[in-house]
Image (tube, rainbow, N blue to C red; front, side):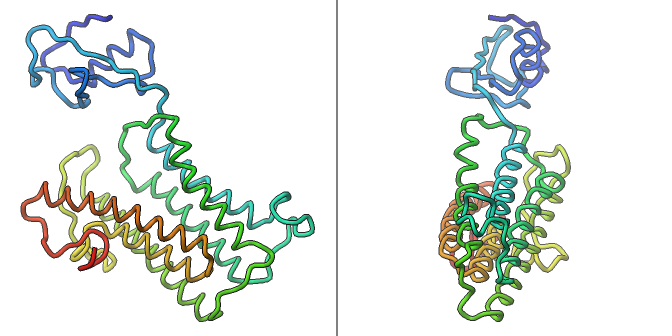
Length: 289
């Protein structure tokens, strides 16, 4: 038990800092709760809480934590390297005679470029575009988060890079059309991420309604609340058509379901927070969903 004398204008973050210095515990491994049920935010001010001249706070141990930036890095870096292991046909993946051989189909090489581009783009966006929350996640959850992306990457890569892989039914026309869809949606996804980043100034927590900008890729904001998810799904639809591979199609379907849930949640929050929110907008698919 620790006792501190603090100013009424002190924030919970300052109180956490004092506790951290006196306890030698990691600042990310616990949170402050006013009661045993309600957690307090770092920006909460002491004098604005229902307390008198003395107050008792509980420090709840959260266990080992990891920052969201590192979580997203692990989620994206894993599929990137796992896919390349299958592309280069490292030993013990296929039959020994295929070790370090290359596919004779140009679409296999194109698929590797597109897959790598997607995850390199996500890594760079996490580093330079997104303003990630300074919060953390329990370290034990990273295995659950990463397993989804890592296992699907291995499943897709195994079949796309398999020596017996067969090319799409409609040949080059199908691959070229799919590539256009993929690149268009990747550019759209990046444009939306930049627009959302510019919506708030660094350090600001004021929420605003996202609107279309001069960038044509953002005009979809007129009819969709979460177009970054729309473009993300479109990219994977393009990749599915390009490879004509069942595991890719399954990953696209599951991803669409997951992103639809996220988009509908964000859409509900927009409608709840902003009375003047555009009524024409849908969550992820214009006029449909």
